[in-house]
Image (tube, rainbow, N blue to C red; front, side, top):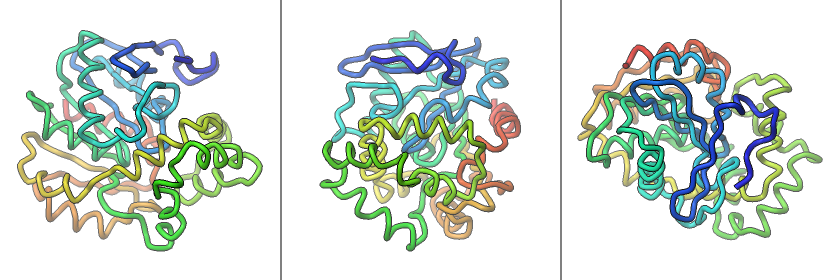
Length: 282
């Protein structure tokens, strides 16, 4: 596998780990109870860079690039379903010789994966935390743009290669980042440009998004074996607060739900506050 560039955030914590066919890029820091951080579709472990040092003072933080994303290679793009990703993560932790996570936190689609982990793991975590959880569809006007991109034809290698080539010259990625409602500085935008210039990352992001099966996930959440908490973004352009609260009330009525200022990338905008929210669940 290829490790991140030397100037990648928290590069000193990066490791290469192989499990089966997957060569993982994972960042591991700290000692103590395991805190598993799961990025969303199109993200990578860098999404938690602002949180990781603070969390590492309270436990062993594990922040992988999920299969098909970032600098993790070898994924089968037709296997980026929530159950298969949970199994892959379990293999990663076993290879790292780490115990079951005490906390599992996810952003966006990573929050859905965190719920899948808690439902399927032989030993559930102490708690699950979701930042801007993708548990409802984006607004209709975004879906008109997105729907063609999650079609099987669009997730094929030739099309994703073309899209990766087009990201820089067209400003497509800047538009996408702006549409989240989060105001990211240029330094952070450059990280996303690096990721989306890789055809495999684009294909992985689209495949993960297309494989998210919320109708299978949500009904089972009533039996979630641990507490759940969620943080919603008031200015989130992708996951609207009102419909999301309705879904949470229906399927996770006992969950603690907070709304913060910020967009869909609110944990990147307010990393210290996001870290403290997670630490409070330990």
